[in-house]
Length: 575
Figure 1: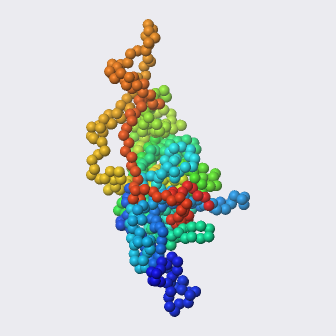
Figure 2: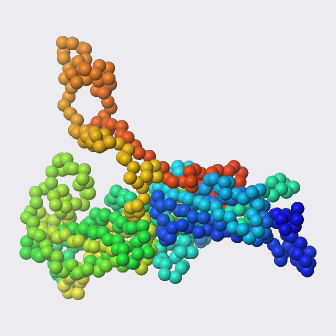
């Protein structure tokens, strides 16, 4: 074999005029990899297709054994612990590779004899799909409730990646340096090298293309923010006075419930014309000290958004809280507050109500009005502690909320190591006399969700395909749903004293024989309703890299951003 055709995996060709010691340094073989995406999207969301080509070019003939292209997602955290005890001080780190999809079928694009010809470019196509959720094996640690595990199996957004946020024109996502979530397409060319200790895999070249992922997040039910130990303040009472060293005017009550989520679009952070808005409703009640007292004059309502980031060096078993983070050395917290708006409320009209009758504590309340701070009728707040059972006043305040376009916002999420939550602060100032200007403030939970892309469809059925069930079957399922909510009879059963035999089954069941008796013995649910019929479930399988996930036993690959991770998606690794 001529020197020009010798694979450079063993050594470079002879070069005249170059000393033998410098020959390898001057003509060292090099393999270059470039990754190009077919789409120009700046942000990828759930079910988006990530398609592209990895191009491999060698400066000299090079032998290789394998080409790998993977879609990888990682999370990394670290904490600096400064305590008086030297043994407890130091830095703790955690790394979690929660996503790894491998492109199959690359062997079909290998050149002859697995040799990369000098100066020739070889293209290896790949296609991945952003999955809807992670595999169950990603979160195998102990959790306090199934809802925690469900949250950890949701795809987290790109978070704290300085390669994106430090670019000119990019917005800061308010993430601390101690926490990051990163995604990318990773391509690698390697070969097997024989040594005295055995065969080992050597990387010839590698390249990573970072991606910005912002998955679709549905709006969650309102949080249970009640209780004395809650971090949120849903109701506030304040005694109003007529002036300095004067008598009491009455008690002002301010309360609100969790507002609807701020629902973003997939490209909201990169579209200056896109505005994410919602509306918060605040209820006021004024219980006067006497019949002649009038409600106070309102000034301004200030609204602020607080972004809270939780991070930990070990997998969390529950949803993070501020109190738990302050007591646990393995958890950290970072907060940042943004001003949303300041609106004048001087023109708010008060509604006068007559003395209300005492509520019947034995009456059964509907489940839709389970919030203890709001009355059953017209969402009127409950009386204050100083209410005397006479005339009172109410008012309703609507507070528009809009996310500012000076920051990049990520949806609310909870992963094994990193979480992002939001809280809404409402501060109402009231006009006073004698230099006294009292104020009331609330702290409400609020969620930022994100809608999916409208042109995305389920991977199991293409767009325009006929529905999985007929309209008649869908109507039958709808009827079965209403049957589920029918009330059951609470009357006691009647037994005949003349005979101990059980009563015969109804006529509708007797026609079906034994099958009717089995239907009659259906168990009841705990809520007093019948057990819902079994419904058809439509599985939504995430699009993998061309059709599957390739696992190699005993073959580790370097992590996407410098950390090592072997095989499929790894479990929690602590430094």
